[in-house]
Length: 400
Ligand code: CTP
Image (cartoon, rainbow, N blue to C red; front, side):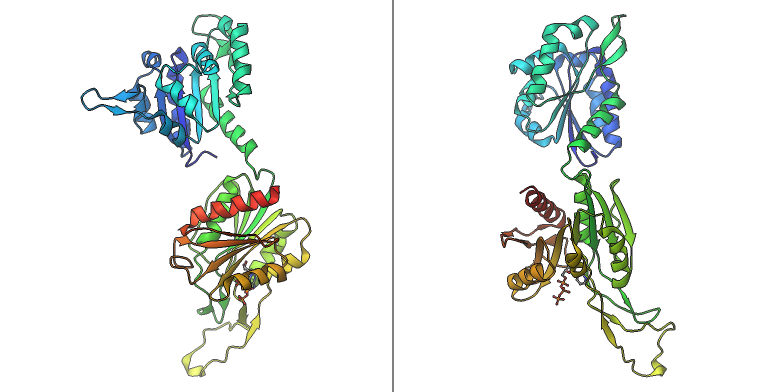
């Protein structure tokens, strides 16, 4: 859920700060990038050395660093870097400052600059926690769109027992992950993706194939999964092996096997993205033994494979169908005609005439054409970024 995400953890001056070390570990273990900002008061409870060792990053606390060679710690770029900002522990003092916009330290300046979702995990003594001003501040911060991570009940550092303990680090971690998952735009959405080439067998050794690497389709499957979709990837022979909790892979070899696998998932899918380079023809019969030169020049009779996407287009009910068109001439006209003939909602046009785009590259340059003939062209980008553009377009089209 948070793998590869930038998590900024703000630590304020309360005894629970010592537990934040475990919180940093949880996010690091999950593959997130973590940076910490400490208020000056928090350094009495946990050292910057501990946090920088665990986060594998410099810890920020003051507006400038290193008196001999001063450098500005830019709160704006820290705020922009973060995908999520978690303030844990959040003391009564910091919560009040957040409500009032008081900007007297780097953490507060970053809070006021952050554009990402902000979470706060209060930690204070029982009576401070219950005080009407604290309770009012919780409500006020939630009205700003910040998310409260509920405090827990138990023994407090003062010796009192009650509510006010900072949530345990693993609970904070689980809370944030569940919150992120619950807000993902494709949660409860089933997506079928096809990717890779197909191999059509001539004999046990030889096949008819194509140059597709499967990278574009796999990046799409990964990005759809990261947006909360339950993704079923039907993947032809490819060295790609994308991994995500929301992603299952069915490996297939031929166009017929890809067709059969797709038919298993098509009806229950909400979105289908057909990125595979499916062979249009396969040998009418495949030899069970290797063809020998002595047998003479082989005559390979070809037959047409099933057009998987056209079949889905003809049978679609609620599904949003996305196809690809790989063209070398009259690109827009050919792609637009495939969109129509296969009854698609969106088509992704790759032109082999664009430098850096196509099978062998890690980059791609696409034009998207919608059912209502809107054309959206993108620059040459990494296949990962192209996947993000395609998914964003699907999301805005579905929403419209
Ligand atoms: N496609 C498919 N099954 C096939 C052939 C193509 O599902 N047997 C899908 C591809 O995954 C792609 C779209 O149809 O999303 C267009 O594929 P493309 O190879 O560009 O076009 P074709 O329909 O095969 O037409 P042509 O080869 O004549 O350009």
